[in-house]
Image 1 (spheres, helix red, strand yellow):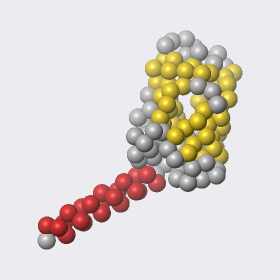
Image 2 (tube, one colour; image 1 turned 60 degrees about the vertical axis):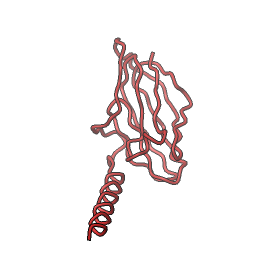
Image 3 (cartoon, rainbow, N blue to C red; image 1 turned 30 degrees about the horizontal axis):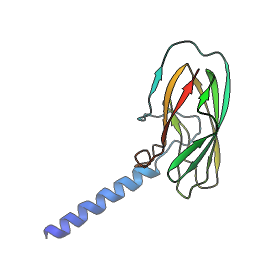
Length: 135
């Protein structure tokens, strides 16, 4: 009986984690509560920013720039991995992107260092995390 209850609770936990991983914002410019944080060092945004090309794979990000100018930064995001991923920076969450798909996320950033993550369950812990410097 005890073994059956342990199996039941284990399966319930796995189902809960799977459903959490499938959740995501339906738009690429939506915002959501995430663990991604910012640490601005002051200064106002200057308007025009840069464009950053982001490639996602299991389980890593590759950005063509790790430093950008303050202002509106456009992230062109492509998922080259088999698992769905998203890109979250400064509390702005992109949509869940399936394999081979792309999305664009625009974020206003002031000078500082910003943590970016994939907030699909467990992906940050597996290495989908980094920092972007904004000058």
